[in-house]
Amino acid sequence: MRKQRRISAWIGFILFTCLFAACSSDPNVRKQKYLESGNRYLVKDKYREAAIQYQNALQVDPRFVEGHYQLAQAYMKLEVWSGAYSELRQTLDLDSKHVKAHIDMGNLYLAARDYNNAQDQARTVLGLDPENVDAHTLLANSYAGLGNLPVSLEEMQKAIQLAPDRPRSYLNLALLQAGAKQSAAAETTFKKALQLDPKSAITLLSLGNFYETTERWDDAEQQFRLAIQAEPANYIPVAALAQMLMLRGRRADAEQLLLQAKRTLHDNPNGYRLLGDFYFAQGELDKASEEFASLYRQYPKDMRLERDYIQILILRNQLDAASKLNDQILKVNSKDVDSLVLRGQILFRQGKANDSIGVLETALRTEPDNAVAQYHLGVAFAQVGNLSRAETAGCPISRVLWGKWGFRLRSLECPRRSN
Image (cartoon, rainbow, N blue to C red):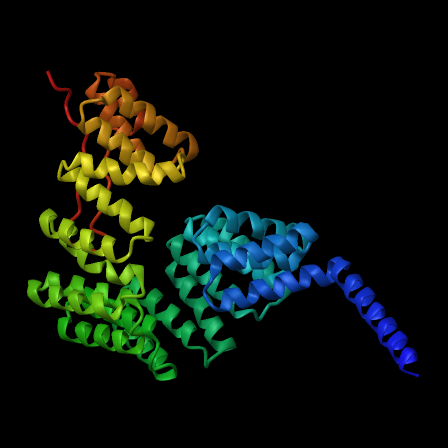
């Protein structure tokens, strides 16, 4: 009897193992598991991990529509726009009626100011679903980009009629009304959006920006502070308030705000670096260098922070220290474009313009549109007297490299060749 039970248990184990193996080898099951895993990462804001899982799903089935679409979502969160465009294109090639992919593709075109293609995507969706709110919104924004504000406002009103309780639609309409100089209507619509969603940081921030443009400073400050309260982990309202305080000549208040943000936003790279960016934008290189050095010690794995610290060291002509840190990055990844550009700057400041040209050209082979590399390459060519190559590389140009809040915009021009 005992022997019979052991045989039955063994047979059960074998059957379970066979079934498990069959499930594991089933491509549909495997790709779905990867998709679900990617979705779990996506909702936790772990976008790189999500992208890897979606890529795994597509290795199992390259024609997996939802895998391509979700990978596009991860790429958009990572701001890898070319990847997002490619994945959306593949989604639509496999399923021409994928409404969400059409909307996302249209918004990518909109961001690139390709308004005609954005409209094409919106109209395609409306052909599939005439009452699609997102499509009417996309069409409204496309018309606004083309300067046809009356039709833009009409389309946005259609979107609101289809979904009268959608706060985001009222926010979009308010922004269009503000663009059309309909200030009273815009303010009313902003307030309607807030009535529907009183704690929307983006709406509070947008209303604050609206008040700032109309020089209603106290009202603007109130909205920015409410936005900070609504989303304490969001650095954007803090930056907006700091900028406004600077415009009002309240430097000490702006600095104090950013000191507090450094503590509050210690887990957010965009937040804890606000104070250092502030000093840099003001041209206070000593304070900026001290701040970035402190942050680098506190966050040694923040590569962006490290590169910005290296940039400041270069501007202060602390080339040995800059070179030492930069070489550590290139030792790990010799093709890191940002670090190659920094090396090009270091070599130029060491009087090695020809060596600088070689390094910058290497960087541009990987990223041909890198504006910073183009600028410094132009400077280097100008220095060696190759003015035709200097102009081809991007000189004379004027670009904003720092001062993202508008505290100070640095205009860069190619230097004259030294005699």
